[in-house]
Amino acid sequence: MSDREVVKQVRGMPTSDGAGVKLTRVIGQPALGDLDPFLMLDEFGTDNPGDYIAGFPAHPHRGFETVTYMLDGRMRHQDNHGHEGVLVPGAVQWMTAGRGIVHSEMPEQQAGRMRGFQLWLNLPARAKMIDPTYQEFGPERIPMASPARGVHVKVIAGTVGAATGPVVQPATDPTYLDIELDAQASFVQALPPEHSAFVYVFEGELSVSSGGTLTALPQHTLAVLGSGDQVRLQSGAVAGRAILVAGRPLREPVARYGPFVMNTQDQLRQAFEDYQHGRF
Image (cartoon, rainbow, N blue to C red; front, side, top):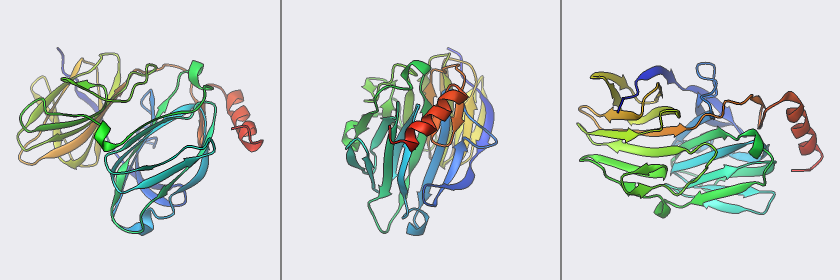
């Protein structure tokens, strides 16, 4: 087995989205435009209701998937196809926008901490116009694995030991793990060698070990991982927590603008026309 090494480190860029929600954009910014099949990664986390209370009013999507993982707080989702639900701490919503959906994501709280991630994944050309679907799982549906001492993993997608995450997407075959290492712990996860992969540290500090060399990743740092068939994470004197995400690259042309991700400019123009004429 060969360890993946860190080929690039990226710090997030403060921005806002929706009706002024403050967040940090990690993928989808000048330092890292995308990482096929991943189009965007946003981290949101604040104790100030003014940073999130306006939420994300109704907005469209076509041609890709959004993955919302809540760490703290509650967010209500509604769409124009009649789906509605509340994401609670530890819940995951994997939405396939397909041919088109108009949805909103609004806080279900007036005070307290709101924290989590939203990841965008591309869809292959053959799936961009499928019907919208959801994979939505409460925290009780996300299995936990403890493959080594001091290692605690929530398995959203992929497999760790005997635990397999509930999310399935054959097009990109994703791995999505929430990994917490106690101080002086280590964890090794096998990954398909052809998959793009990254680690994003959001609590404490972790290191990626490759060939005996440690690359330290401070809090709020994303590491793009190079080739290999496993990733080796270690913690030092303090604990650390990160998401590890991997997926099969699509290697297809990308034409994107705002909430639409297609393969050609003509398809983008059609997406705008369809939305403006109420065809989503």
